[in-house]
Amino acid sequence: MTQGAPGDGASSGKGFAYVTGAGAVTPLGTGTENFWDAALHGKSGIGPITLFDSEPYPSHIAGECSDFDPVDFMGKKEARRMDRFAQLGVSAGIQAAEDAGISETLQKTPERVAIIMGSGIGGLSTWEREYKILNEKGPNRVSPFLITMMVPNMAAGQLAIALKATGPTQCPVLACATGGEAIAEGLELIRRGDADVVIAGASEAPITPLSMAGFCAIRAISTRNDDPARASRPFDADRDGFVMSEGAGAVVLESVEHAERRGANPIARVAGYGRSTDAYHVTAPDIEGRGVERAMKLALADAGLSPEDVGHVNAHATSTPTGDGPETKAVSRYLPHAAVSATKSMTGHLFGAVGVTEGIMCALALKEKVLPPTINLENVAEDCMELDYVRNEARKVPDLKAAISNSMGFGGHNVVVAFSEVG
Amino acid sequence: MGRDEILEKIKEITADRLGVDEGDVTPEASFREDLEADSLDLVELIMELEEQFGMEIPDEEAEKITTVEQAVDYVTEHQAA
Image (tube, rainbow over all chains, first blue to last red; front, side, top):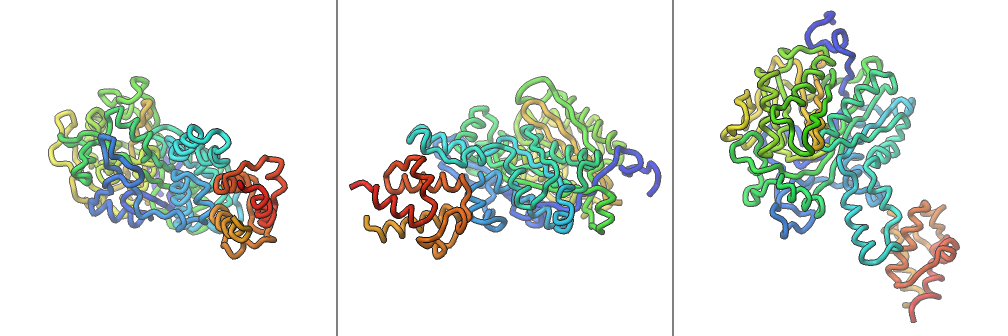
């Protein structure tokens, strides 16, 4: 290992963790392979809403995890005791643990395995159902499982039970930056020596009547009901809002020493992270993208990378008229050479979970040297800068050394995670 | 509703709520020991019996119901005429 070489997080940054496993449940498919394969083929996971009757709403489309069956990952009883968000998160976490092959670690040193599983909202569908029961039938009919199904930390708690992992648990709640925060905090747990292995993930199940009503009220949701596959179109002149999606992602982060000792086969490195807050507006980002730019700079400094090292940005870009432009300004100032993808064009917006599913794409892009595309990008909008967009088809990038995943959440939260190749 | 019919219905509800095979829900089976129900499971199960059989089961009575047979007894005795 060359001392201080570009991309060498060990010697020039604050220390990296290996990504040794990944799991995903997304509108593009359940299982990392299905998800990644669909993304590289530019498929859309968006379709008509089936989880509730959306007829009275202005938008009738969403990204549902239609091939997901919780019973593939847990018992029927366990599944019934979890809100959908927890089912998704636990399933992604179990997949990630299996992919990393950490069963021996879980058996021998479960106290050295930490779990970070965040959610932007938590068990909203359970909340809605039980609130209806409260109003219609009274307090004595409210389920004894309301509380344990509703609280947002329960995907973390349930995953710990499923895997018998007894290290620390955390549940970041940071709107659409939750997933990035989970990976950032996971790296920090490893750096601090609090755990050898961290399962870092996030999950969201927001396709419910109340949440849809709320997001429609914000006027943030696409109403391209007649053409769902083309509704999510980040950077495009004809974009009209994001598409709500559900899903979960999880990665296994591992200390270098632990991974090497057990002969793990890493996918990529989490090299560093950067965070900032706009302190500007609850939904709109800083118009010049200064907050996300600062987070990108901090991430590279933390990782010991220079801007030239970063060949790819998985942008936050959600396809809203107000959101995409500022981020493109930040990227054009700081990483003008980077190839940019907005994979929400395919997955829709998985809210809290999206920082992890997009982080997984960065890790896999580094391993396989191929970038997932931005679909539906026909004409770059006037308010978006001309960048090197990966348009409509995957792109091979044999020289890719490092990639970043940007996440920006309502509240003005910016989290950027820097990934680098295993080396 | 006759006793056999009540037993069948309780078997069905118990199997569904506790995620066990209906065959394991014998009259002698203890909810906690044999069917692995925890305290929250039992609260939910009692609520479901109340719902399905249209009755109120007071907490002090519910605590005495520990086996399938006791549940059948309670429902048989207290069902609406």
